[in-house]
Image 1 (cartoon, one colour):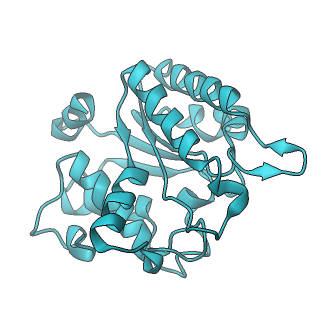
Image 2 (cartoon, rainbow, N blue to C red; image 1 turned 180 degrees about the horizontal axis):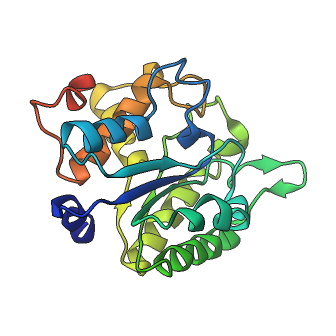
Length: 223
């Protein structure tokens, strides 16, 4: 995280890009409320007065790591960002009639290729993110493989020595402490609602050491 903290301390403007699937896309399931990338933009550009920073969201629904690689030039490379947050895996791990959409070994290989392509852009920083766990028995085609794909993300980030924001582990800790699964954070079995997106933003702020009690954005959700 040192490189990210360095960017936040620097007066030089930065471009932050969020890349992923429907969960990062944030459409529909937030019911008009801000998603976590928009909350990040509010915190960075307004509250921290980094007015010349640019926050870009190029995620869209249905993406797998295959799609991220196929669309990389158009959805990432052209923007030349300094930081790229990648949240992916919910669709990769899904079991279709023909089998798992993206087998685990290919998933890891795709993540490693993404990391290399991001770093090749003038030393841009890739940040891997796990995502929210599916609600129990609500998405059986994803639930069975989900833990191993999140473990793979952690493993790839560790081996590549890049930052990771482990939302999945954070959500599970919160659920354990509360004694129940946080259904009120979800729009359906796999997509977070506006509350879930606030939890995503909260952990990002904490990891980047920009979570403060005097911030309106940070007070939106206290978990």
